[in-house]
Length: 414
Image (cartoon, rainbow, N blue to C red; front, side, top):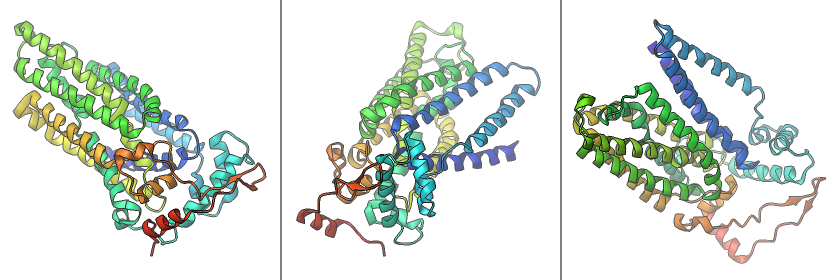
């Protein structure tokens, strides 16, 4: 059993990195609404797993755990089958000199003909990016932290957002919330509690699809941190001052204990809902759209590793801390969320609506994060094409100020 979980963990860890690498390549070429559905599917599968656990936990014998584990094989087969229909990344195809296949992939992703001007525009943009990003040879892990194009800051942002995501309290409710809910006076089983939390998370992904692209990544993270911090503060203080000691029989709970328990449960649900709308999907979206092609796979891997490392640290230390200080552990998450708000405000720029190449330009220009929402790329390196691939509307020649900008801020790869 332990060895199988170890192998499964390796698979989940690898897929979490490859998923974001693939999404980052594909979403830059077609409307984000098409790819954002991946987060809905992810949460829907989690919710379904909780329903299966609820339905099988009372089954007598080993079937109570063999059935849920066995059903994972079905999802694995579905995933493998879906791979055959997944288009290859146009960036990868161009990087391996397969231009015809890249052109076809771009057309399929955008639902248009191969001779559509959009395809030619995207092809040129990708070719320019590949040429610029691969001049320096094969990227190393240290390059993820180099000063070129502020890569050290971009990799740091990816790692920090995953760190803050894991330590904002949402997963604590999933892992150990049933203990607190018992003290709150609920008679619901842990399986029902999981279904409720899973259902709330699933529902929250739908407004996330809209808000990520309308409000942007930065505003979503700031609002999410503020909302979750409020929920953690109230739930922590109410739980500390009103809940009965763990193990108190339900018939001995006072009206004050029950009222405090109701408040804790309500703010726990709001906390989980806020997470699923903001801090659940946004750090993964940000991770996938922040890095140039040269280092993207390595930087995304570092961000994913940060996520799983802090997930382990939370699951290992949280029950020990909660055993000592009880609901006050939520104040630790409150402090982390305040830190997250300040960090996002000072260091995380807005990337909504920007291609990977435009993100490069924004970091080269050293735009202040709090001014990044209004920043516009120059885009003078792009052409527009007609349906035959001919260049139309050529870009305006660079001004003297733009030439000076290039000389000061664009570093060549040695």
